[in-house]
Length: 175
Image 1 (cartoon, one colour):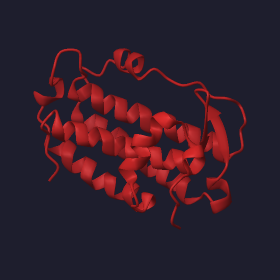
Image 2 (cartoon, helix red, strand yellow):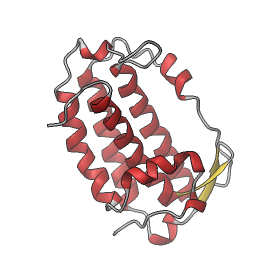
Image 3 (spheres, helix red, strand yellow):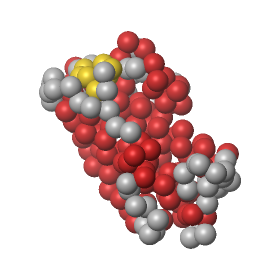
Image 4 (cartoon, helix red, strand yellow):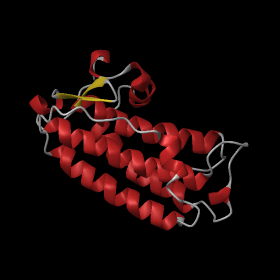
């Protein structure tokens, strides 16, 4: 099943950059493909790079990886809630506070990767069970309305965004 691109009314303006990262790709195929590209990127990080930040005040590679996993988990939770027509407004989250309190300094790259692979595979099972009707269901989080379809695109676009940053600013490689 191809998941259509969400209309701008289905997500907050802040998230447009993530949606645009998906462009016209089949988002379901991209989510699956990202398992391999992300794994390839992480496998080439050495432990010294895990503590590297490209400038003062920016997150280390380990913190970026922790943020990716946190966001994967949070967006999937939103997908679950909204796909079940839960109309309870969900709060946003402060990614900087999450990173600050994530204590990612001692987490290994293999542990980050293992966590991500489990999260993404579980999320794909959830996504594959959603009908076209359910993809259009909406809910509110952080004062914004999101469709389930938009959250799925945000999931893929968010990872792509951070992988691009890891390549461009942190000089990591995707092989």
